[in-house]
Image 1: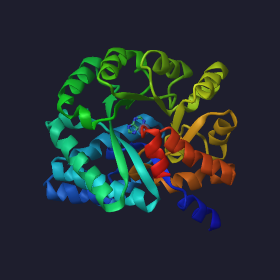
Image 2 (image 1 turned 90 degrees about the horizontal axis):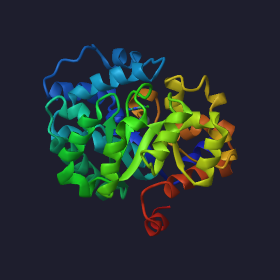
Image 3 (image 1 turned 30 degrees about the vertical axis):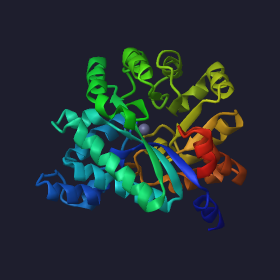
Length: 324
Ligand code: ES4
Ligand code: ZN
């Protein structure tokens, strides 16, 4: 339709994308074959049918299992390039992608294999599509802070090519305060800081992410709206929220798309953006996410969401002027 054309025509940045969550069932089977690994599913259809979740943990269990087929530098390169090809088709001109090194190093895959593969894919996407990108290293919050600190040390040779650190995985029971020291260390090394907070966790976790982790951007943040003073603070400080509508639907963070808070966020003056999170698992890439919430929004709102994605990116101002 006309609205689809409007969304498709908006240049946009994607700021909340787990590269391991872009692994499509077809590629999972192809990599299993290439690496001679058995996977506990008979077909792409059977695998897709397993993607029904009642909460974040249901998804994480299957997401970590899926990542097991990723073994070589070429695998990570192919994964990244497939995502960038698909993102370019959705008029994404810049992407800041998360990766979860601990998911791989815990299986004996060296940090450098993961990083070099992803960086090669990023360079190829820029040459092929002019799509620029940045890399954000996420710590798994269900693991210890010592494990995160060891991961930051392992990353040391690649830190010039890594823009920031993030915090993801199981939120409930793993508050931001658990990672205060590693986020301080990352800040001292000049890295940007982001964290998933307020997806399933309470507003208090968002406040901890602000006050203890000194985040530059808030991933999800939905439950911030339960706290009026916090909402005002996020609006007044111009904090960017990376919101993921189809993820919120699939993980039962919202009951249905009709009650998604994205419109309310914009009305409250929050710098919200729209992103796909784990597109292979949640049933849509970035334009699908824009289309999912479009009925709640005006065209000016949709354009504001796309503009926010550049303002909230880690590009500098003159780079933004060139990208939009
Ligand atoms: C994630 Cl949606 C979501 N939440 C927390 N951690 C994650 N890792 C990958 N996707
Ligand atoms: Zn996420």
